[in-house]
Amino acid sequence: MTRSSGIVAVFVPFILVGLVAAWRFALHAIHGLALKRLFLNQGMHVVDIGCGPGRLAVRIAREVGLTGEVVGLDVDPKALRMAEKYANTVGLKNIRFVLAGAGEGTLDQSRFDRAVLVAVLGEIANRHAAMIEIFQSLKRGGLISVTEVALDPHRQSGDEVRRLAKTTGFVEQACFGGRLVFTINFVKPMNDCGPHTIGHGGGVLVP
Image (cartoon, rainbow, N blue to C red; front, side, top):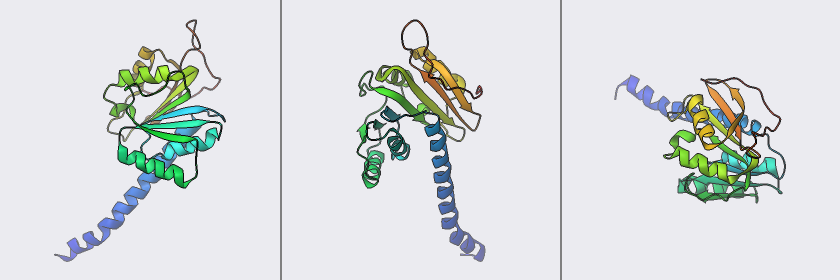
């Protein structure tokens, strides 16, 4: 081994640790944005689609309180075991995790006030079926919040998110962010006469 290759070998682990730490910090920040854009209240019922190891789901559970409920949905059993362990570690009792994919008919109808998807829509094989199930699982006036991240290889464009949501029957309520990270909120109409908005807005159109 040459001296230069030896130096590289020494520093590679530190570089990897730094990258992992940077990614966790960025993910925490993205989750913070998504959380803020959900406009949660105590007692709400929320489903986190593609919850992974439960970092966002736990933060949501804290926001909705003991009278609320969070359901984390994911297809990865290892991630769900991590999520359950994390929720138990922090002592939360208002959260549960389900091994299933969106679009498989697992969610109860008209149960949730909010549905959240963060950098996960593009990983769902049948996105149309997933959106239909989420639509049916939301109460009338309920909100679905879709966040997409530029560095995600499965990122969906704003136009594609809108197409999927509006085809399903959702009505766009607000858009936040820009090209790097954007969130689009849609609501399930209160009735067939027209859309229902929940009083929050702003943001910009995302290409």
